[in-house]
Image (cartoon, one colour):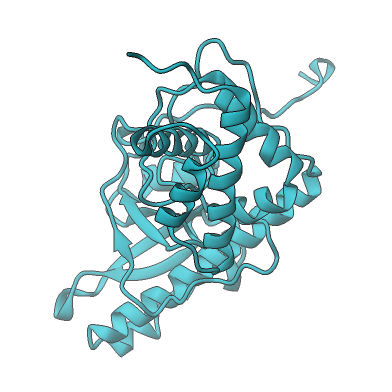
Length: 284
């Protein structure tokens, strides 16, 4: 017999529980999924399997909005629009939690760059899940444009600094201290506008002398989170086909992972105009 759809009370109960675990995870506090699931089953008359799948649904909603989700609960996109509304309402009422997930919390520290960096393949067809057609819900967290810009700049600088230090460490580990000293954080030392952030070297051992230009894109969400690319960065990538690499850092403050894209970038990403230069018609 098919169970009835989850009602609002059940959705609120499981979202509250999921977000409690998420907050503990990002705050470095101990918790176990099993104990949370046992406690939740006392409040919701649902099977363990149903609760597990609903946790995956919540992960799918968070993934759509470019926010980190709990590892172990792989996003499952077949969810109720009612669940999405509850998740959005929760985030809107807890802007401090949204800030923590989005990487806006000022207490978040740059991860240790002197370690092996988890590398994965670029996303293919597994991009952000689509919202239910019946839902027009959007996430409206109260932050000013200045706050958003400051958050993005802070995380962007952290990402650049992380890769700069990681590249120097990586080359030193290869026994190429000479090359490590030659790594340049261009965006910091010389300024923006070059179309890339770091000048480094690629290869191993005696072959680790090929100059490479790294443009670093950092988010705290999953690997499917969209990122922004300027027209200048795109132009430089097309000009420097052999040397240019776009390094995509994601899950940055959680556990940084990355993938790398080589030009032409249009082979891997869909480029959608999102900012337009407006000029009064009378000046044309």
